[in-house]
Image (cartoon, rainbow, N blue to C red; front, side, top):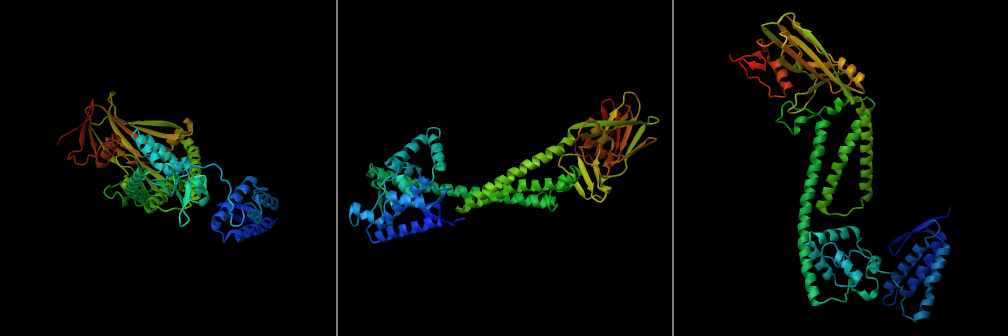
Length: 506
């Protein structure tokens, strides 16, 4: 395979084969020797290189590679260095005829973004008139501001000499300063126009300072928000330290949700879900931090590929996470319940409801609870068991009988699977004479998955029955109604009425 070389002509990058490169190099060296000591020679050489780039771009070459034939065709079009003197005599410089003007933002005549300066160069008119028009239209429902913003985004900035030549169109519309920079000369320039332009530039500087202050404040907010959110995510969900940002909330614990995920989805899906959630959460806040830093320090960086790669990774992660969660969520499509009832052998005048096993007595350390919600989960990683708080309701029985009704509710892929999941829930209680012993929690057996499981204990007693509840049972009773826990009663006796329980004052 022939060797290819990359060269830059007129701000455009080309690939050229080795033989064509030697021919082009000799041609450019001959032109350099011809014009280096001539007045305006550097500009002439630059014009010729720009013309060569245009010809190569039109030829494109074989598979994008400039060949010897392309160089020969270019020389026949531009001409040989020794032919230039024959056309204009000694000291005559070579110029090509430029193409039509192109619209750019003008960095040499800018107030804010160089839009009006670029339009002025394109139209060969003083930009002050366009600036006045934009101001007038801005007061018409902000139309001028929206148009200016759209042009600012759409138009490229004329940074290179070749782009400036395309913007001005011909040498008749520009002057060259001593340092080689192009400065505009408009046909309609006047003293009033110059004065107005200076006013706009002064206002533009003030506006620029105000915008920079706003961007610095906004960038600082982005950095702090992104950093604190990521820090919270790491502390809570990696180090299991929920009190870092809510130390005044007692009993609130969400930090074990990643561990709880192992008891909700399949073992194969759990690590993928955790990794994808981390990516989906982390990337946006890292972007916030980086974007905020850029706004604060206002630096340029060629990071388009980084942004694009981050977006692609985030979209792919979100899509994969959605697919996995959808497949796992099918297991919660249906919800069903099962019930069982046990009657007291005789209706007691006073029914004592006392607690059996309490959640506070469990050795499980992983706890998931939400503020203002009675639903509480504890996980024993050693036994691979889940414990969930039960609900207690006490109602009046119109048949003058006393009974205990256990209602279990679960979800599943279908109704049959939901019923099977509800039947697997384990709950201990005991009816003995006038005493009912209730556990504070029910258990999901080892190896089983959580399926939105709930358990309701309903105690029925006829009107006139006195009900006694100890402190733990009272907590279960009030959790059913999502009410504040009542722990300051001096007397724990209640009386059943047709409308429900009524507290007995001591």
